[in-house]
Length: 476
Image 1: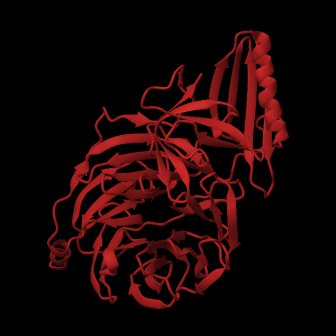
Image 2: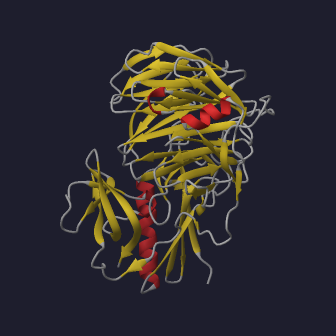
Image 3: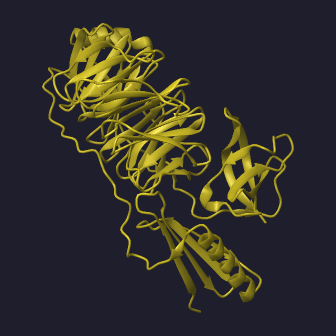
């Protein structure tokens, strides 16, 4: 039997939304497809006792979207969201030797996203692949996201991937889900997150701040463009762009300071009392978080794509456009310049005496950055690197397109309910032992007024909301 399809779009030029919503009724089944315009989207199918009930449910869904501003449209007439990828040039290294690389892993595509925590390394590339590895290089799992990964950021236990399609995926649960959807007029360059508050730096040099409910909090237009740096702490948001670094009060109440840098900022790193900006004029500059004063400058030989430091800035590392990595003392003295062994380092992170870099040739590279390894590299002695291979049996996870259902909550499950509040769908905990006033950071695309869901676990977050841990199922 042929289906009856209603196709709607919400696309506001210069505003934000750039989405479609399609409802198809086929007998007693209703299929909903939704997502960003130009993308395949996600699909959910529900069954009903009768054709009349199915049509009524479809009409209700369409009515809800129309009231939110969606309008009938023809699929394919509007263009997909514009995507800007960082244009980089990577030349061979002129260094005499390769850095003290312990191991490297080939992801298969140019790579910007990296996060390293106590448990594992996360790496995301422009093909939308995210791999997790142990600190010894063992490949543990793989995620396939719908669009290229621009960056990976963490907020306590939670890991987020910002993608070319404007979606920020939560990779912390059993299956990844869309936690934030950035408006289509924001061409994401970089992200940072703290206590559920997401900071977005974009192509136009703008800073946009979004809360855990994916709702706009505040934004600022900087004096420059191409903002490749955003870092946040408990005091401020540090925004790096073509005209320097600007610090804003974290509540958006005003600018704290602005410092012109030597060249456009292409990467940023932060320590407790300083931020570090790598620029296209071959330097990394250390700026005081308190005043914005330039405290030190680290001179490289070509454009700086990335930088990082050991705790307190004892060592400062930089990756340039000529496939080299530098190690400096805190005062700016260059200790060595060596090849990366895997293209130019587009991003890097330091943890526990190791420097992790992701490169133009798609490699994740682990460098020994201990005192002894730094000294040995100065003397010309480096280890033989190990090339890591991915096992065929490594599990692959993709964003969930359907939701499993249960008829009763397991004894250990937590029940939440989706309710309408002031015209918005919110999710609150129904199970005992949780504050029913707190919102749950919950995938927006599966919210339906009155619906109940079962979650494996919830964790309270600073700022007074709950985050999902584990699988989500619908309670029917």
